[in-house]
Image (cartoon, rainbow, N blue to C red; front, top):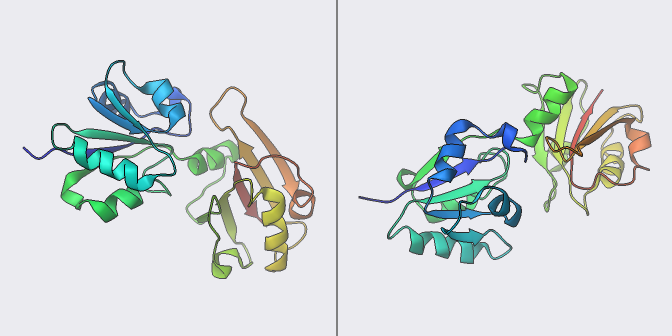
Length: 208
């Protein structure tokens, strides 16, 4: 029998936001791959584990070797289909080897916190990557959700958006550590966001 890679979304962080099927799959795993934080929080005792780090080739090699004897469960934050290790796995393995369990992304939770729909939003990540001019360019009624990082922080992104024609009074919502006990959020204008300190790893929603 061919063993499977099961990519399980574990939500934004809190166990309250993990789907039951993902929890069961992780609890039954014999080989588990995930971030250091995810493994510390969810890995059953005495099983084979591998930390997802910057050596993605090494992680994929571990998965390939482990598949010879067992299914491999890969935990990814949020939803696997939104900027996760699934993209790299799909390059190295055929779709029939992969099973995906969806999860609740931080972007979904951000819009829920705002009581706002996201079906009409442009979703991008500037977490370790640049965004295209087309995605950043202002249009009337455009709604933008962005994953940020230390380099592309909300203050930096706000300046970039102003350069792309966004109005200074554009509305910004920042949410960090979503689902955790120390979750925090802030509402600002785009101009105010250029001076914002902190919220380096967060969800940034911009709209007019």
